[in-house]
Length: 226
Image (tube, rainbow, N blue to C red; front, side):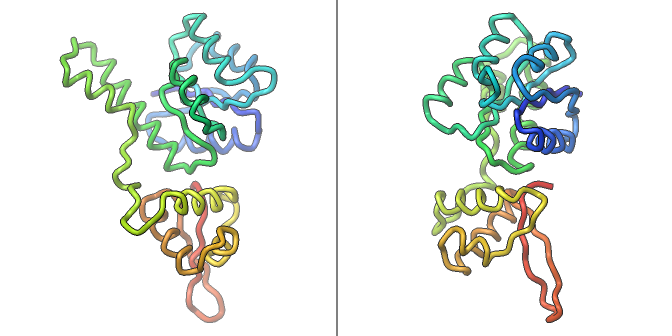
């Protein structure tokens, strides 16, 4: 079992992220913290394998906390979760030893992919056997979440797919949104919104539910997460 500490200054987001983690087999949440000091205290108490760490925290950034954990020699891993997608921020995080960098807002499926890749990495490293080149390649490969089923089909735009996903993600799992609403917010045609929503639902980025009205024809509604 991989024990996870969830760190986010937003109480609601921390609760949602903890829920996402608990849904992945082999992982359990052993603590939630909302700033750097209690997060560090939790790590020092022991029993934590992985920290799901927000970058923007009160008093100290997630990146600064990661560096402090490294200086103090704590044997834990970090996945950064943040809305900060600046190239310099990503580079600095990787240099500090962050294994994955997940940009908010993300879906339960997006986090699941990172956690499963991390579990694969631990399984490979914990084997104990001396590594040949193929073994090293497996470790490096485990740090890359498989993206084949998320590949954008021909005729689709990465930017539009990201925009549609972000619009739906802003509502989380609490509210379902229609293609018409996405169309209006993304400023694309309803048919275009429907195509992207269908694609994102099929690859697991978004979830689909049906609402039946008086006409008997169900309306397709989409939401992010479980």
